[in-house]
Image (cartoon, rainbow, N blue to C red; front, side, top):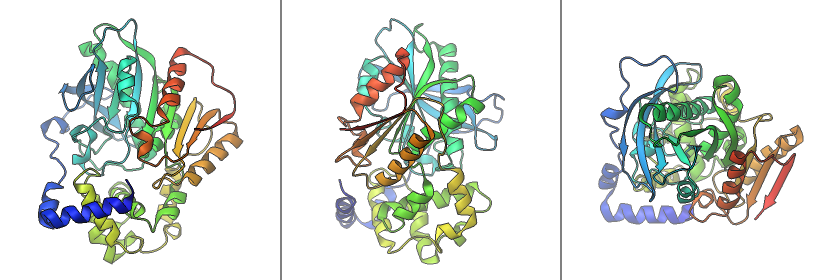
Length: 405
């Protein structure tokens, strides 16, 4: 669905039920007691401190759990995060392969945690095939979504830590509660992510050896990754989606970084809409109101060009992936992506290839930012095959492998 069509639908809905009613039903969920931070925490990251069964829209052939675990944020401060765990119910002949999922943008306030949404597994490619193949999936919500914030939106190192600790926590949980009925889990894991989670996946590869040398990563599958934040921001300042994501990023960064002041970065006329956008989740019906507010911003939300603001330049640079990642890498990108500019991703891939990265790059004609993770996407088959090869110990093809489908 195009952004124009979404706006039209939003306007129709607003006219039908009224702005006030739409605002009321668009409020993020109250996370509830499970997501609260205990007074005392284990000192080590990746430790499960609470768990419960989870029954929201669980795929056929699986059971699910919700866990709360210890992690850290960039700089090392201790926090807690939650994650959903998907376990196949069929008896396994051996250890279940572990797939860690890093989700795309859902919002920047606690009620936008995927585990609180109506469809928590949305966006995970081929999730039914993963269950059928015996994968155990652990999907972090990230710090600040569900749990106490702020959510460090597009702060790559924090999200990478949350993912790596979710893998640690999964093993800890199986040791405590035997969720795999004795089958166990593979020592290695593969990480997939989309959009915000694509950036997270790249940073997970960069951070793994230093932050979590005990976590063995067999490969990384990054879909539509915002690898160069400055280039993407420059390309999207005047688009609706650019205004929406910039609003969320600036609200989050103003709470994370001492040198980012929301009221100085965002022009006065744009502040009410930008704050409204950042207060909701990118799910229906709130997404319609968000798109309408984004359309109301006739120009960029920024008071001045972000490239002229030293603090933003610094943070965009430190949260942009760079350099060879010492792990097998799969990158998928829709050629018609209207959120992450394909040209930015192609430039990033060119830089990796020139630096000697071994990777598989799929540029998918006719595929957009959202259809790349819809059921039946052409990325599913090669991503599943590539992932199975990592667990089978198959050697990675040397150099830069480019594929068109």
